[in-house]
Amino acid sequence: MIKAVISGTGLYTPPATIDNEELVEAFNQFVEMYNSEHADAIERGEMEALLPSSSAFIEKASGIKRRHVIDKSGIVDPERMAPYIPERSNDEPSVQCDMAVTACKEALEQAGKTASDVDAVIVACSNMQRPYPAISIEVQTALGIEGFAYDMNVACSSATFGLQAAVNSVENGAARAVLVVSPEICSGHLNFRDRDSHFIFGDACTAILVEREEDTKPGQGFEILGTRLKTTFSNNIRNNFGFLNRADESGIGKPDKLFIQQGRKVFKEVSPMVAETILGHLQSLSLAPEDLRRMWLHQANLNMNQLIARRVLGRDANEDEAPVILDEYANTSSAGSIIAFHKHKDDLESGDMGVICSFGAGYSIGSVVVRRR
Image (cartoon, rainbow, N blue to C red; front, side):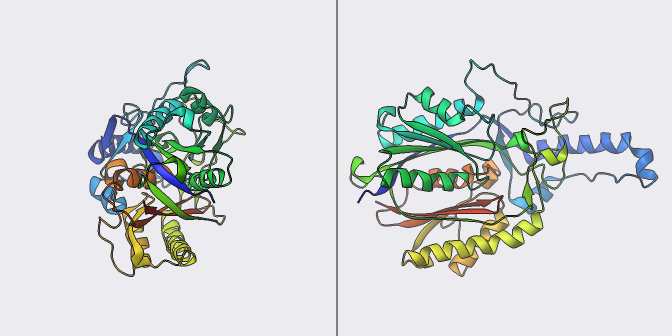
């Protein structure tokens, strides 16, 4: 029987950063301009005045302190409040391809493999730059990989859903090794003019190499003990942008064509669902919560992660048990749990077990239980 293992991970981090103070300064300037422009209508009660944001509000609501972004200048421009990422010609690599190649090369180097050892590429993330040709095929060609590639989108759970697809391909013999890549440009679909969500997202790209155990060195990487996926439909996290509509002339787009969510409902409904999924997954593998050495959870909201960890463990988890990268990277959608895994896996000893879990729009939940070889 073929067994799949995670033999390497990679990460691309955009060099530009925006801390909460910078973001708030730009947002509050925008609020002042908006309220001044619409002062008469606000006074007549025809429009509501916008409220300012603050660093304290952001950190209390989310745990985020700063974020990495592809473009900083457009976001902190109060007259624009959106990243400026110019379109490239069809003959140039896409932005997501460039991000992916960097992350993939690190994953291959960590695993001690080359492109010739890989048979498939899955680009799994919340938003693709285009419908076709697939970003994954572009990445496959840029890396010089023979075989096949495809894109998939399950919002914030894309990477863990991609991991299961990679495990399936390896264990059924369709591929020797598969790269799962998540080039998330979340700043592109965020409404930076919305006080309740303008601080949520950052940009990053992760890569994971999944391959046959027999092709790895003894003790290398993480054995994948099992995967579990769950979906249930909800409108509480939504983005209506698609090929049947388009952005306005400013390129910023209408509010409902950007990220929108009912945060309190998401927190209330998703948190117990995630904990139940993890607990059920562990039980199916004859494991108990105390068998977990670490949980690499989706990095969406610190309070949410703390609640999920508490429900799983029956007590509060410390940062070693449930590491946080949210403060540095903000929410990077499907890349978040993988960034946590990438940065907080090397200290685990042989036999240590953990769970990679992501969750988000759909609702969707992906759980991957791993053991250090």
